Length: 242
Length: 216
Ligand SMILES: Nc1ncnc2c1ncn2[C@@H]1O[C@H](COP(=O)(O)OP(=O)(O)OP(=O)(O)O)[C@@H](O)[C@H]1O
Ligand SMILES: [Mg+2]
View 1 (tube, rainbow over the protein chains, first blue to last red):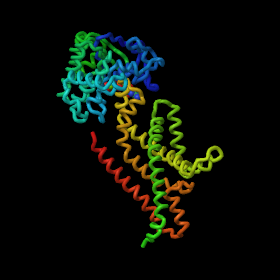
View 2 (view 1 turned 45 degrees about the vertical axis):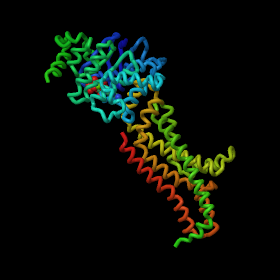
View 3 (view 1 turned 30 degrees about the vertical axis):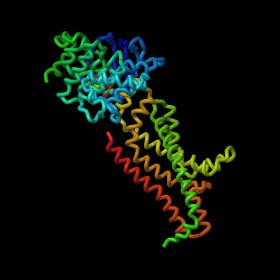
View 4 (view 1 turned 90 degrees about the vertical axis):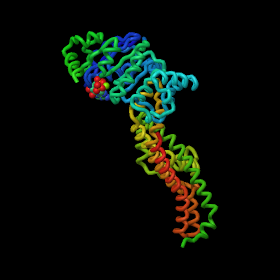
């Protein structure tokens, strides 16, 4: 579904992604962990071309993401993205947030888009907020709306960039629960997170990054029990001991 | 005490000029707003050539006097196309004001969180759609006060038409002055006509500023 083949990226002279190769299969949940500044967000954002790559190949659903011939808007319709700070549209209601892209990018009629939006709002558990504005919602509710907004496009892949990092602790669970449900239903997901519990429980695979490299990847049970690389051991020691 | 007989005697002229001033202002307001938004988007669009054109436009227009632009359209082009004073003045005024509006709108767009554009684009909307539905509506809120002030300037600057026989308020004020040679009163009356336009406008700008600050 997603394959990175020897992808490199530079910011000027700074080498932020170093020879990244990674396969994500359909229906797989891959969790990306690693210290701050290791390039996790950058790698994720290359998948829908929010960031460009310097060299290598990145293919999503058989399409070369970074080729000039690729219609990036078409590709993005199949890739949902959830951001750390939700990025809901503050001047639009919850419903309008969700229906905008289906109407404008997919050309759905209002009624259909409306029904789809309500379906996903039910799914994330807040149908009663349809006519509220984002500012009237709690952080956890906002993030669930953002997930519903992504799902309403019926994407083949969902990308999550630290979806719970901006939330108060008591709201983290409700968002992770929605994500877990999605995983169970077979959504292909790439999740950057610091929630080790989620990685352990939901991920099919864990990818550990440091300094722009994929240092180690493996099944969560094995990775957490016996990390091979020194850097992974140090990282896990640090995050699990607090 | 003001000599009100001037006002009563020449009221028709004043009023005709006043209406033309309103006409210039409304046309200028709409056109310079549209042009200003387009130039602002050009300045920040992810395309070098557009950035460059937008920047050249703004820097060139902002840094020359308004009267030069108006004279360019009135006299400068007269060998190729014969524009009336009204047309030349309105075009000049529109272009001039658009440069300032473009700067205000650009600042407004840039103050909208970058995550808004990213969210919109990553859902498959085009750059133009994302601008239109997501970024510009939020930018407008920030931009209302400076643009309102540009509109007030526009009304006042429309007096430039007086110099190219644009038949607006200032033109007729000059005409009345030539007839009466009572400078002070003649121009005070003209000023009152301008105030009738600009004071409600500035009141309206203040109010919409407050209303927008309260919304969502
Ligand atoms: N636009 C940019 N220009 C230059 N350097 C950048 C830019 N964006 C990110 N970087 C740098 O690239 C590196 C990787 O950043 P990235 O955001 O991908 O890290 P991350 O692993 O997501 O970290 P975090 O856990 O803090 O989110 C960082 O050192 C960052 O400073
Ligand atoms: Mg990050």
